Length: 342
Ligand code: SF4
Ligand code: SF4
Image (cartoon, rainbow, N blue to C red; front, top):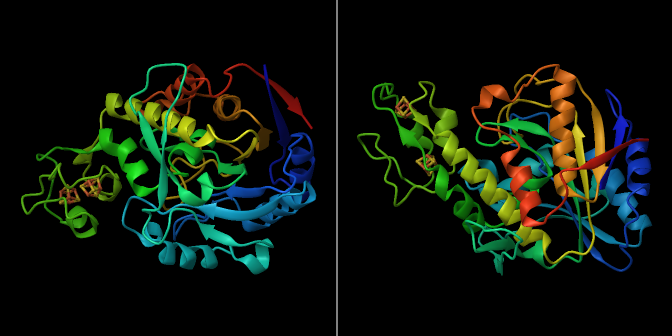
């Protein structure tokens, strides 16, 4: 059974990260260690703050590792769609070497196209056969995955598995997962405002507002932008996306012997840190740590439901546990866990 450590705190102190980290017994001596984070989209204020990440950097060094803080470019076409834009957002949010104590490196190259194709080998049948892993993550020797646990419009929940499966791959890797979420269109609802067409980075929206499915990569930006609900995906599409995220995570994690996961259950907003900040789904819970990505996400979902006192995921029209069940079937980890308070 997997162990998940909980630092229960409404406002977790940085020193608590040290306590959590010490439980994980990581062998990082002489290794290049990717510290995978999400530095938040502009207008988002709930990403995991750099002062926590700085403590992770210090802990990696204490374990003998050589850390760098990293993320990949987005599939949708806003500021973080290329590395130079991402560095601007990173600096605005305090993710700079001077503060973190190590370099900040965008892992998939200038335009999100630099990666290594790996085969997905799993214990169960997969929809994806291969995935393109961001080069700097592929070339790392070990990884610490720092995730902000949140709700998510397409997957209901986003935590460690999503941070790895979607967050550690190139644009082609992201498009392979989003292939199944190219939006449907309800013409009756469309008022012709043109917001979706204006912001689609792939010029996939035609003059009559129908989507050119050859050009569309399923990034989902137009769904978020449409105020009329005219762009949408179905539950089946969202379930398939969750399965693909788990499969991509399987491809990314295959090469690592030792990976640590930290999930921050603080400011658990309805949408992820790619979106403008929304109200929280529940009170702050604290920070979880584990070496099992399935157990830590399953535990996060359980604790969020418990803290809210109701099933806060019901409004998403998709079960958030599709991803954890599929990841467990693939052999990525355990749905059973022992929760240890520290
Ligand atoms: S954003 Fe929505 S309402 Fe506006 S043009 Fe696009 S689909 Fe129609
Ligand atoms: S049509 Fe929508 S989902 Fe497709 S690429 Fe454009 S913004 Fe993304």
